[in-house]
Structures are given as structure tokens and as C-alpha cells.
Image (cartoon, rainbow, N blue to C red):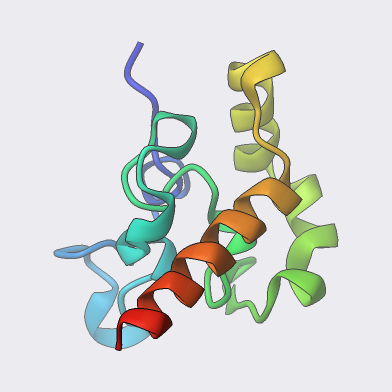
Length: 109
């Protein structure tokens, strides 16, 4: 089964080459390579709830702490959680992975 990324599921058009890139910008989940492959998705396409700047309800959202309550109610989040079952990676694990990669990148610079 081919797993859909958030931009495919939500049809927001904020992925590279999408119809809303010019007016809304490219979604950070579509280009966040730190979570590539998570839950079988491209970049952070199946972990968008931990990425700041994604869209929900027609509005660009802020940080994980500010948006997560809404994300838990999202049909896409529920779908990914259901599809992944026992292999679903908790948000704290994903956030820690992103932070570790960011620290590693910063130490290289």
C-alpha cells in the first residue's frame, strides 16, 4: 500500500511544484529532510505535526507546543497513527531526532 504524505492527503498544494506555493509558500513538512522516511513518508510528510509552519484549517501554524492539540484531532494524524499501529513513533521521539540532527549540523558548521 502506498502511504500518502500530508500534502497528498490534505491536498493543500504547498509541496514543491504545488498549486499554492506562490501564495502560501512551500510547507516545511514537504522539505524537512530530518524526518525523511518516518512512517514511510517523504521528508516530514507523515510527521507534519512536529514541524512548525505547517497549515491547519487554512492557517499556517506555529511551534509543536502551540499546535499539537489541534494536530491530535486531525484526520491525517489519526490515519497515520492507525496505519502505523504499534510502529507509530511518538512525537517526543520525532522531536528528539530532529533536535539531535540539528545539533549535529550545527557542530559541523
